[in-house]
Image (cartoon, rainbow, N blue to C red; front, side, top):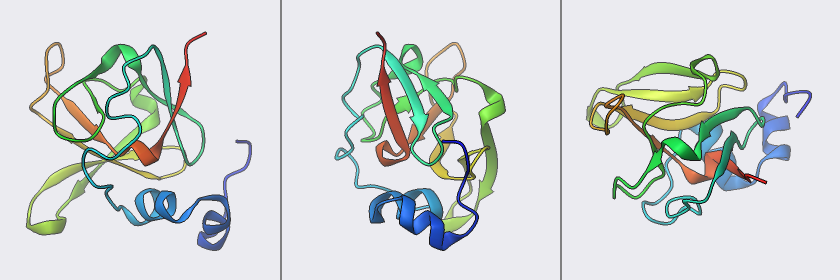
Amino acid sequence: MSKLPESEEEWKEQLDSEEYHILREAGTETPHTGEHVDRFEDGTYRCAGCGVVLFDSDTKFDHGCGWPSFWEAANDDTIEYREDRSHGMVRTEVVCKNCEGHLGHVFEDGPEPTGKRFCINSVALDFEPEE
């Protein structure tokens, strides 16, 4: 995607209602319903809002939490971390640094080598299979 929308109205025109709710309003999809939860083929996961590469299939693992889980971002320069105090808890929100789309959260209960679990909404991701 070459040019990002400049207003929320433009975002609403570009995204479907579920994508808008998750990416722009920090919503969450129902667990175990996303198209990427059980996807384990080789490829790249891009931001559904802007197309930036966010995660690689090599770092995806089955956590059983109901959302796609990764132990590392493809490039830390594409991810922004924000404190999230919603729902009566303190979490670390993960946002696309390019378009500021909400992706999910990162937790400290993942596997080695990082110990991190990026818990990401499928709706926030587009999958590009490896050729």
